[in-house]
Length: 440
Image: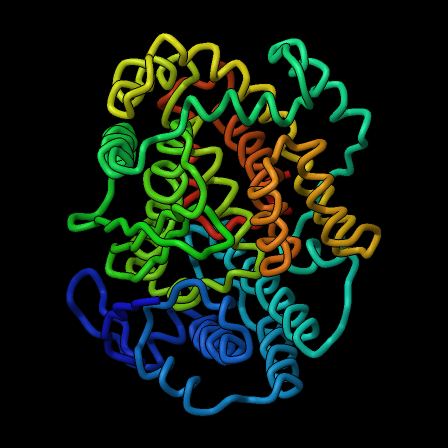
C-alpha cells in the first residue's frame, strides 16, 4: 500500500504564533508527548509481525524505517507495552491549568486502552487464544450481543412474503437483486456521482481543511468490498473490490463509508484537530486491531444515515443513480423495502464468526449459516468467511459500532435530533479520543 508520510521536525512543537518550544517547554505543555512517541514506535514495531496491523501512518518516516530495520521479538514488545502502561499511569493527566481537562482525560483513557489492546494482539501473535467475545473485548473494547436463529427466522418469514415464488428464499433473493447490479462500464460514473453527493452533504456541515481529497481505484482479489488507505496530508486512496457484482445501493454506502463523512473525513479530522493542532503524536498511527476501529467503522456506517435521511436517499437514488446505472427508477422504493428487512439480519455475520472462531462450526458450516440466515449468495458467503479468517472478531465493528455510535450521537443531539444537531454531535465524535466503552 502506498504511503505519503509528511516530514516534520522531531522534538519541536510549533505554536500557532510561529514560536518554537524547547524540549522542556514541550514536556510542560504536553506531559504525555514522550509516552505518545513510544506508543507510536511500538505500534510500528508490532506491524512488522502482522502486515494488517498498521492501517495508516503519517508520522516521521525515519520511525517507520527504524521499525522495518529491526524485527523486535514479540515477548520484548509485550514488555515494552507494559512499561509504557506503567509510565502512563504515573504521568500527569493534563498540563497544569488546562482548560479542556475532559479532552485530556479522554486522551489518557484512549492511550491506556489502545495499549492494552496492543498487548492482547501481541499475545495472540504469540499463540494465545481467546473466545470470540474475549477477543473483541480485548481488542475493540466491546462485546456484541448474541442473537438466536429464531430472531433471524422471524425476519426471513417477512422476506418470504415479500419475495414469493418457487425455490429456496436465498435463490429468489439473489435473482431479484440481479436486476440492481451496476454494469461494470457504468460503475465509475455511478460511484463518482455518489461521492459528489456525499461530499456535498458533508461539507454543508463539516469544515474540512483545504486540499483534502482522495483517489479511487478498482481492484480484485480482496476479502473486503471497499477499503480506505489513509496516507496523511489529508489524502486517502479508496479501493473498490470488483470481484463480485456491485449492487446499486453499494454506491452510496461505499461513497459515504469510505469517503464522506466516513473513513476519509474521520482520518482528516483526527490529523487536523488532534495531531496537527494539538501535537498529539499517537494520532499519526492507526493500529487496525484496536478500539479505534470500532469508532472508525461505527461512524463510517452511521455516517450514511447522517448524510441521507431515508427519504433523501430514496429520491437521490431513484432520480440520479438508478438512471445512471441503467436501472428503472420506479423500482427503487420496493428495492429499499427489501433491503431494510435484510439489514435486520446484519448480526448474522457476527453469529457466524462467533461460532466459527469458537470452533462450534467449521468453514462449511459458517458459509452455510451465512447463506441460510443472512441471505448471502454462495460466493459472497465464501468471501465473508475469508474475511473472518483474516480479520476475526473485527466483524463486530460494523454493526455493533454503528448501533453504539447512533445511540451516542442521538443522545448528544437531543430531542428532536435536527440534522444540524446530529451533524454537530457526529463531527465532535469524529474529532475526539472517545472509546467504545465511552459511548454507552
